[in-house]
Length: 308
Length: 304
Picture 1 (cartoon, each protein chain N blue to C red):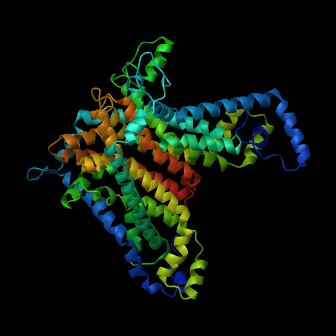
Picture 2 (picture 1 turned 60 degrees about the vertical axis):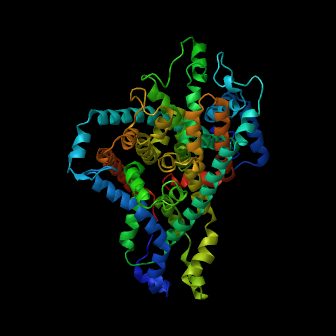
Picture 3 (picture 1 turned 90 degrees about the horizontal axis):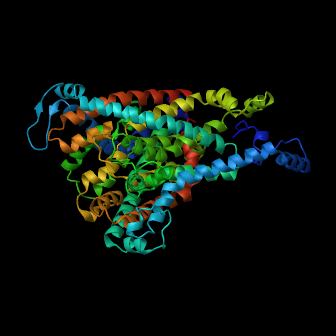
């Protein structure tokens, strides 16, 4: 990275080139530039660093997946081996054939779907009300809702536990799904999106005799795909990756959540490392695939969070 | 602007009068849920912090005693200091790494840049439990990857998680790994917002990469860097899932970060007033910082 970060001529690999030249000239100029040692050096360095970053970022995951292919004694062994001597499918076959693990995956997945749907529904309705409706008390309700965003989980962890105990929700799926469903951050995010929908759309619908609910259902909901994807993925991941709350509230192994299951597995069957790694890989994969499918929307959303 | 003045809105929407009832129907689920599961527990937490409360016996009002106990407890302050140490281990490293990765990602072709962004973000979607399990095996004493690398250099095996000298740093590595994605993406977005003309001028003057970064990129990103610094601080000092799964706070308390300290008290103590008071004290500090960030963010660019 010897050149300035982002000016066009310092980034020859970028498709954008000076606009004043004819295409043929531009290509020729580029070819000339590419022959210069300095350009080659920069290019090589960028390629090298890119490779290093990708490798380092993905290494622990690759390590986990590869370890799943090792027999028990190979995962930690002296002398150390990166790749298994023989690639064994048995850990993956065994863990995916394990009824308890499958039930854990299924029950966590089902809970996550319900949680996600509920989270989108309740938060988007609230977002619409805050973005588009005038109502008595708005001036107090909105800051109060926003404030809940800044209450750290640790501060209310124990009192939340007392509340769900009093409500007889302990050791049910409801205790995992309901308490975290409403989230001020999601409301804030969707509201921000709704504020940018032009009000002329609404007015036209009202002129045509559309009621308030009609405006919400027929105009806002169909336009909400992008924010719903972001809220949905965030909720799904939060539910899937949740650990401390299930550990506190779920005691029957029938209802174990996937992270809880893995942590318990590590505690109880510490010697079966290959199996543990295969299980971890199976638990990580759904989330990674989900991310890869929606990565464009998620990354765009984070850019927005970058103070825009 | 979020809410136009009522007068103009009234002209736009003839049905305005019905809004209040509709608004509350739409808000009801959220208000009920937040009320029961966030606001009420928060009020309860403040209330219980003045009591010697337990699941098993009558609670007793003790005034400021819990707070006093926390403030004079050396183990609490040790946990806070350890938290600050942990912040120093994670936040600067992660800021510098994100900056370098973001600089690289904004200077390569779009396709390479996408690959970089996606790979740096993938760890962020992994759970703390899975990251912990993976790193525990990497740190394994007798056959782990790290000790194999250390042996190549000629050094003897280290008990990374069992040795108080190394344990906190060993927890910091997966913390950085998990958190790098978001700060990098935010930095990339901020870098793309800097006007090209600044870089063109710098190039005419023959500035090198470091000079450009030092005199253009960093000053232009001041707000974003401040934002990331403060959110990084708040997030990092609250980390407790990694040490909980990796070490349980050991060895000898070496990885007992403030939240884990509180959590262990929750689980271990018969009387919870102490841990609630400790959590509230921490909240007051972090809440102040969060509200400052929010004000900065809100005032700068988050215009409705």
